[in-house]
Image: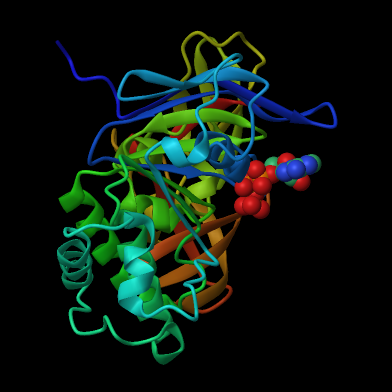
Length: 358
Ligand SMILES: Nc1ncnc2c1ncn2[C@@H]1O[C@H](COP(=O)(O)OP(=O)(O)OP(=O)(O)O)[C@@H](O)[C@H]1O
């Protein structure tokens, strides 16, 4: 028999003041897997998490843990009996309790408490910190103690709401990686809420992209990045260039050549989208560009408006001759042509997304 998901949420809905903030949300997380609920501020991520934690009741939907129902229209297992750990941005350790007492907080009493506390502190690389107090710790250390405290009772599921946003950039990456290692080693299923695509790409086995209360796409980070469902999904992960065209006979004409657009009726407006790193730049040869290729179509000319060095790459902005629109190319290393320089752009066709205009 196949194993049921550790966490399974189906058709969850919740309204506040008759406004749907969670709208038919379904998702599942397997043991040891991290799913990131990713979306802009206000799209309903935290409300979804609160319903799963049992703090809020849904208007509709069903939640099961390891196949056992914990919440539907008639059932609601109390939060403390759901085997769910929580970690939020304001992870507030108890200031009057030592580190060891903080970690022991959810463990009750018994002979196995002290060894479990020691095991957890070792796991977060703070083996000798048991007798210290929270005010004696750095932000990163406090976060690691909070992680140890949250997973000490062996929750089957961990819900995390922007848990790293209070940390500075460098520390954040380190703590993220360590947190992942610990959660994977414990086999905990993790649902992590974030509005940062980079965090989701770094941490998730699966991303559930949320917008206006709905999950608009679910998949592995690679798939979500490379096969977005629409322009907004593509643009959530990076700047995006949009080239407009119109369908004629299953083809869309653009200054970069024709694109196949089967199934779309004549006259449909189409957005051809491409990330800045997938534009190719070539030199002007006395007013002519490079020859067209099957992989990159035809070149189109633009005039450099601005070029900026970003550290590991350069960003170059072009005003295109054909319609005056601005396209941005990202080039590895240093490439800083002067404003006013004519250059030719080509599109890596395998990296273009084609969407009918919404
Ligand atoms: N208790 C409440 N009463 C009324 N409206 C609420 C309540 N809780 C949340 N909302 C509204 O529901 C919407 C979704 O809020 P939620 O906190 O779930 O979004 P979010 O995606 O987590 O955003 P953020 O990242 O900013 O926290 C928001 O418009 C918010 O104002």
